[in-house]
Length: 191
Image (tube, rainbow, N blue to C red; front, side):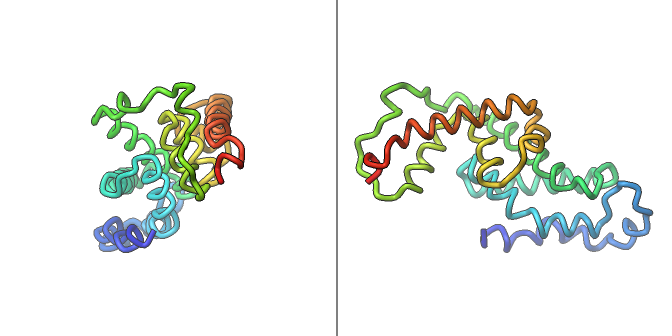
């Protein structure tokens, strides 16, 4: 995401000024300023894509990611540098859920009826159909499916990020994939 790539410096701009004081701390599982900056460089785009795919609003996604990095920075002495990616995605996920609940978007998700599983429009772009189907998924199913299939997280990592058990994660992913399979249907319907 080039849009977010240009704004990554926002997260690190005040941070670099205090690098010398934090880097003098011996590494005891506490994240150093260098590790924080590396986390920004390595994971900002991935967490932004994850949040954007779930929220479908660039400004909201940008705010959630910025809040997540800010929370990480405020807790930098409590964060193990080797677990920064997991901490970041977990924080971003919970921040996203809090924002969605605050705006009461949870009630806006449509109930899936048998009629909504079928479509009569002619599509030639499978990607368009897939995105439409993903947007119809309930929030939790969409989040775990996105983390697994788009970001490549393991079931255990998804469980840590979302606070669900590994078996819950597997069930939500199974249900999401089943819905997608039924929604998309056979290839004859796609063409």
